[in-house]
Image 1 (cartoon, helix red, strand yellow):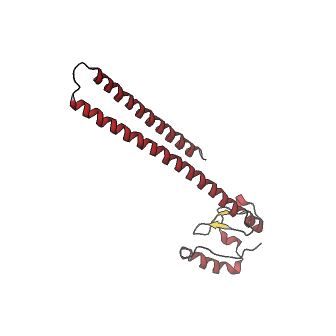
Image 2 (cartoon, one colour):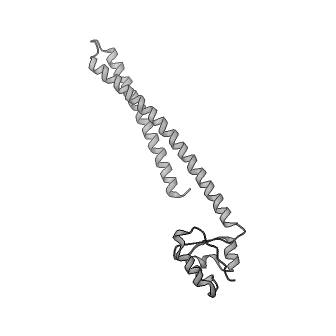
Image 3 (cartoon, helix red, strand yellow):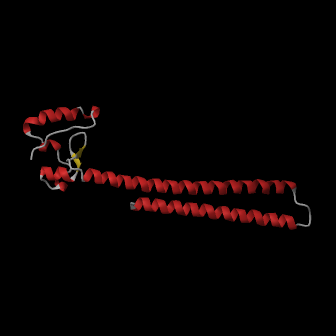
Length: 164
């Protein structure tokens, strides 16, 4: 988890905790006012009583909403953890595939390559990123490669032969 995600998660927990505490405080205030009304020597004002009933209902609805938000937050955290685990698995599948894979931008600059690809090319991985893929295509096949590359918005995958 990145620092930014960790801070976001801490802020979410803090916000939920503050919301929960506000609900508890509201429930205490309503109970206190209700107790004061019940102990008053004169009969309680009907309007005040109706307001307190309405306020109690609202606080209860907020409490229910808070519980639902906490449950949703937990579900989101679990989904995020699962997505991160899946991303790591796919990263491992990409990295350790027995076939060389390169990821390039639409202009053919290498963005990422797996272990098999940089082993096949016999190059330092860090020095290849950002370089044009065409430099690894045999000179007599570059025109064909560029033609295929120009059609990439219509194609998702291209197989090419690289030179050693």
